[in-house]
Amino acid sequence: MIYLDHAATTKTDEKVLSAMMPYLTDVFGNASAQYEAGRRAAGAVSAARDEIASLLGVGSEEIYFTSGGTEADNWALRGIYSATRGHIVLSAIEHPALLSCAEDLVKEGADVTLVSPDADGRVSADAVRKAMRDDTAFVGVMAANNETGVVQPVSEIAAMCGERGVFFFSDCVQAVGVLPVNRGTADGFSFSAHKIYGPKGVGVLRIKKGVRINRFVAGGRQERNQRGGTTNVAGIVGCAKALEIAEKNREKNNAEIAALRDAFVEGLLAKIPGTHLNGDRKGRLPSNANIRFDGVSGEQILMLLDARGVAVSTGSACAAGAVEPSHVLMAMGLSETEAKSSVRFSFGRENTREDVEKVLSYLTEIVSSLRAGR
Ligand code: PLP
Image (cartoon, rainbow, N blue to C red; front, top):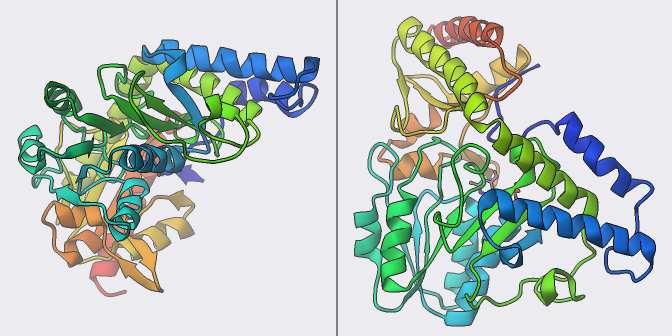
């Protein structure tokens, strides 16, 4: 398989798996238990928390472990809203982890304003400022978009929210391990281990010390009494290891992955007429190429690539049996047809130049036969 869907998930790194194994086998104790096996598990969780905090330049007491990015996003929004009942500002290109949660909150009486991006997929600090009100309690703008890879001006938005004393949250699921994410990024941020060659089902929510946020899962006293549930020790250990590896090799990986992505985009735009890169060309994640193919359905390209062993994705979601166009591309001003003609290719550590060449040749063949109605 040629895997070009790293924005969806990644293969667990062997080193991450080795770090996790003892906590799935010999040291299987419940981290809340008082005896030695429990204390050892709790010690591993504490070390992982310290390591993640130190790699991200935040306090260990600011780190909460969750079941992934979705839960961390839900917790941040719901937790702040239920503590403040204030107005919510979100970018229109957030992941459903925030947008769907906001829809639920609207049904519960919340007031939510969505901020559109520009045609390049960027949400300006100015547009966010205009959406803010005196009673705004939560501003959420992701660090980088999962569909277009477009990097958002979060430092500027964070500074503006800081001046007004408004809580700023940034979904960093696509950014951690790629962009420098740290205490300056936001008062609250989330990330997920499976996007950085770690295990699925574990994520992190950082909440700045002193911010009042309500607990998310009622139950035991885990996560300082804020999130009940038996601690996912192996997952947490794997999450820390994945972050350590990603941070250590960040610059090198970014350069190598960007070179492959650039070769792909240049080759594609040159070889296949009527193709366009969606989103800003420069200010995007090194891994992402979101391409629009005039007159061709993205779903069909996906299926024909799949038949050749290539994994890619479209931003469309299947809702009630019908394909819904990407809300991100639509918010950028693309028509429904244009949005449905788009495919996301996201590169990763294990891709090669040969992969790029193969996929370029498959695409040339697929697009010309689809355009010819074959
Ligand atoms: N936020 C963004 C930007 C994402 O890309 C994803 C995953 O696709 C999530 C949140 C959800 O993360 P998880 O899969 O860990 O729940």
